[in-house]
Image 1: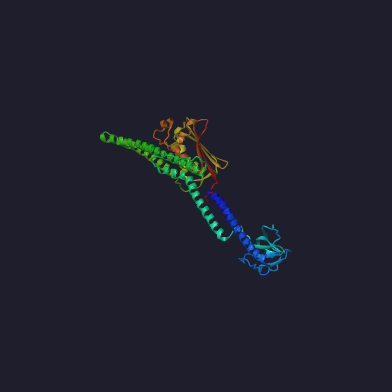
Image 2: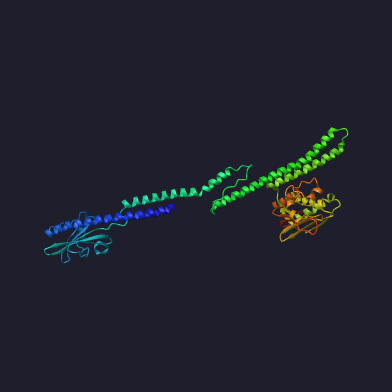
Length: 444
């Protein structure tokens, strides 16, 4: 904008200068023609013979002397043998000028012609004097400095305007940078100011604020995770310390086999918690094992066949559609299925139902129990880490509260979903994974 304004101003000034200088040169040239015509007229009044019609600048000016009959009586060398250069008929006591381009006399040139009347005793004679017109650009001696000055002024104005405008436009960037520089890992409450105008800088500020919000949420989630993990790890460690101290206080009265059994239970609980924490850390870091096409029907069936001793008196009913395959990590999917089965066994009254179907290219696995069920408002709470409902604490006080969160995170890492949905009785967990083509049999 600054460059455009300066270009218009410079153009206007240049046009004015060219016009003024051209007019001045044209007036000066006309005055020279008049002086030349007056000089020839003085000679002509003394007599036609011996009149010197050679112009002052023979390379640029031409002279003709025309008698009262309209014939050329004398002419400069370049006008010799040519007709009168003009048909102007000035007043007897004045002179006249005209511009002429082309014609038989001057060819393709454009000239200024001055006609000057001379009174003699034999009639009215006329002196015609011509010189080239001043071009619109006057000459390279003026046009080049004007062009260079025009270019320098426009570039300088554009640079200065751009510096000012870009500086004002980028001022919010400096503010955002200053605010971001004040943010530390321990204080993520700061937010960058959002510019008033809806432009790319506003979008940058809003994106930065959303990023800071996500970072703050992630840090708070990590702090809660560390707090909950330390609390859950402290419980089995405290129990083991208490049992050991009691046994050492009365070593002869202690039941060492019973103490060892109690310590083993606490160690198993700590081991399970550490394994869950490791799995959560792997999932948060995006660490994934080798993906392959897995026969989901065979995986679920094999896992159910392997669990009778853990089910106890519960009945397990299965309905598995053959030919259902997914692409994923076998160990992770096995962990997901076991977490769902463990949860169902923990809350079932007498029956656990496992169903596997294929719906529109999606493998659907349902694990249902006939227990107390889950209230609708708590169906998302159970997927939060270390979140345990009262019923879960009563049935399994040693649980970690990480089984269902890990199962959902594994489902998400495989491009699927895991949710607690409506059921006529008990809890119903539904896993949906993108299906793949069934792998070919590997047997002979």
